[in-house]
Length: 243
Length: 309
Ligand SMILES: [Zn+2]
Ligand SMILES: [Zn+2]
Image (cartoon, rainbow over all chains, first blue to last red; front, side):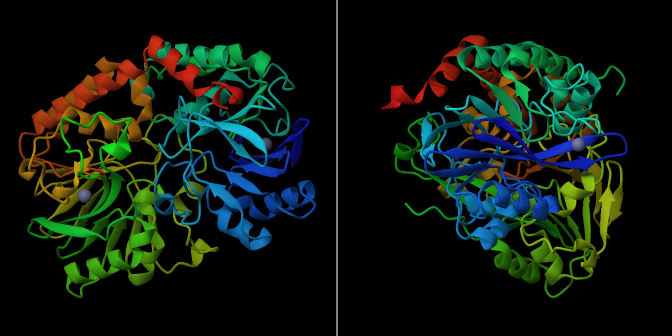
């Protein structure tokens, strides 16, 4: 399904169900001055529904640029399928060198830490403050103020909350859903100095004017809810007392 | 400079245990301006990153990781050569990342009787949402209907062993994982610990597929630092005491004679020295995560577009 996040940023999401809760597998489509930028290509599991949503948003033309937040399978598997659907698409891998070894022989390597224009719109790609694998990046869209992230800022959600921002969810995402996500995805929690990581998040949001944090695996978080959300994340990173 | 992944080289570590390596040329000192490499590399010398895979040839044969897709055909050819016409019985995937698992289906296709062993349990505290999904879709040539692959696919967990004949491997819970589905492996006869992403380091182009103790220079902390900064970016925010406790656990409990990493050289002598070097490297890395450093770094990274014009 697609939800309009800002005037020109659209949130496309599929839900991966478990016994109790869902996990988002999201992509974001941004309308730039000269075309559209798709952040992430989603999971091959949901390929058909993603293609249908993008067709609707782009009048069947497909995106002009694909900007990947992580170059791991299964998250890159849709790139070849999208190209057979819509023709060649400029693709930016979440790696500085050798995109072919992450399975993306035709992709371009990323440029970090300075604004780069895609579809006539400036984006800054940066190393994530917290993620699992090294072939990942966060992307800041200077015009909308949306920061796209993986894996940090992910959380599970209850069925029924699939297409809401955290501000629209009753009481926001539950601490349990944040906690369970981090325990699943961040296997090195035991080694993190949570205070220093918390300081880094604080510095990030003091430096950057963020309208939304838009995660690949969670509901988008509006800027005014970030302080509380970061507190929940730091709390979630506390290792359980009984292993 | 054309940057291409080298074709796989190999070396026999001990009877029936083969180390295969492909190298990623990262450039020379001038091209790596932001690196401080003087200590361990000459100005005109290429720096390499690498990927390793390990083959055990015994009564039953096992391959640990696959190297990367540009080398798919070469990897199959090399395994064929080393196995001298015998078949592969087990392919083990340490974790579902393309640089470790990218040739999974190419290799399974070449060896339809091989069993694929993948980590079945999340490495951290979690149960691992979406395990099946993450683990089956590990290569871009994954068949649309993966259930139709003739190979048996089996989840394995820490503590499980496989008897290969004279060698026995055991799967270990990883002490330093990145992806939540990760397994380390040990081999009992040689007392080798396969540490996957941990304990790698960059190397000079003269030192490909060479034992750490046979390199033409000592391993510098900088080599270890640069690699771990890439592979484990979270180490900037590391709790150094917790890291040291885990390293002690490797020394005391696992107590290997050989450390065989996925992105560095095999270490057979003086393992304590290399472990100490890792501790120095992570200490240096954690200084990058100090609030004052993060502040200037983030201000630099996040400067608005007009500053650049
Ligand atoms: Zn949902
Ligand atoms: Zn090399």
